[in-house]
Amino acid sequence: MNKEICEASAVRSDEIRVALYCDQPVLIAGFQALIAAEPNLRLSCACGILTDFFAHLEQFRPEIALVDAPPQLSPSSI
Image (cartoon, rainbow, N blue to C red):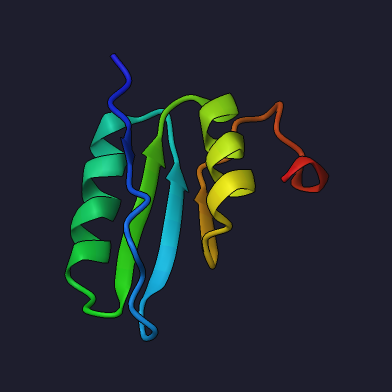
């Protein structure tokens, strides 16, 4: 089961939005905890489905995209 978290709320001027793609729930939970511990970082999306992740990147343009890349994903496709 893929649990997805996406937020479209307003961003403070000092916040850095991070979008996360990973198909491993335990890794998503770990990255969520790390990002939550940093006051200037905000997790804008945690996707387990690649097409949803790309749609989020295109629509919201987060400052950082953190990708646990599967073998079929090339850097040029991001």
